[in-house]
Image (cartoon, rainbow, N blue to C red):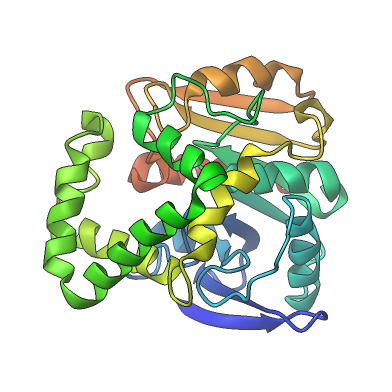
Length: 294
């Protein structure tokens, strides 16, 4: 795994990490909210064996990426286009996970000519009235509410988490295990082993590397109108969603998927939110992306 930085024309830096086959099919990965470019403790064997060059990008204000004050969802497509140009990529695929799904959707709307396909995995759906659906877990609904109304409270919470990760990582692991008890059994199994907890800490800690501001601000950004209609997305779209996902409820995606002209929607029975942490499902996602490349 290589962590690197791209210098954008407006002077900002954009952080990214590469996994898999460095000469393989390029796939840009958009992390969740909050999140970072760091996905695995080691390189990813699925990407290597399938010939995938996975390029994971830090969004503005996360990880190694400089903030972009006042950014919108569609602004991300400009960063993606410039990053692809700097990396020498004419065409590529994108994967957006959870909150990152909104950004993959934006690419399918704004820059479809650059994409082989867009995969939306456990993706958030646009909110009808700026508020999360009642079917979403209480914890996530509270985070969206605080981000809109009292972002300072959310920032204080993330500062406390950042301090705990830095000063008392074992205590933070215990807090993760306690938090996991409120998840469904399918998701809880990905927060059990020490390796899983270390990976989560690495990912979240890097999200807050320079500041906790975007961790608190981004939910409000995603809750706003996205700047396009779901049905306006173009090109091949692959949807992967767990049927018992409560962090980003599948019911919301099910309402919208039929409006897409070229969409393959896969709803995984008995699965929750962390689809990319399941080795079999992750390989299936990458294989489907690989098959879309022409």
